[in-house]
Image (tube, rainbow, N blue to C red; front, side, top):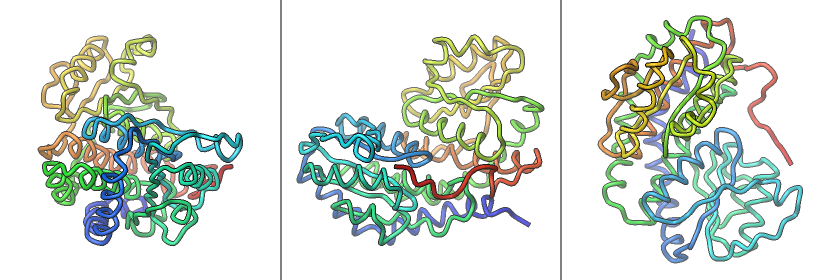
Length: 340
């Protein structure tokens, strides 16, 4: 019998298609609001997996729209009552449940400060939608497993669709439309070779750059959530500034490389770590010393990076079960965490 997590991973392509169909009008409306505002900057408001989605969207906006994006600590509003001057910008708040008090408080503060606020949420109506000027239903559907999968992917799909509506980037629009088909292929990819070599490892590094760094961060969190395994995400460049000292014989390293401008540098670094006898894997055909993991090449650097998380989700769900854990109900965790 499949776990809820496995079922929800399998639903990712359908969920993405549903979002693009059902929320097209709201995405177009929010994109028009951004064009009209022409924000000098953007901020994101999120926690956990939603914050990793926000990091991905941050890179996508900076690379495509040329606007700087910063992550706001939600406690600035809920705890510190800071009066932020956001009138010249826009804010994207991401919350699967739509009711985390600190996320709602920060979105409300951004709206009151004059920012164009857009909520990406899996729950409508909800407090986060009421606190924002625009709300987009990510339409992931019910997510019963504690560890987010399809809601993470759909948050990014919504962010990319919003970005394409804002900028009028036709290449990105086409790439987003093609995503459900690429995600269907990604669901079938087999990363069992990585599982077979991990053995009794107790810690590992996840590497990426640009949007793929957000994927690495999400992957590290999922290892902790589902398998009680220590995993840390680093920029493939930053790992050389200290963390590399821990990379010894058979230390596991998983590098998420998309077909983008950062691929060559990621490959160079992961190959160098393999040269130090690390157990190094990467999602690239260009590796020489590291081992290759299968991936889907989508033809666009942003969607290429997003599809990398899907085979990882399948791998980590199976890995969790193989270690005697229940990926649906991680110890000491619950689905909705309401922080102030």
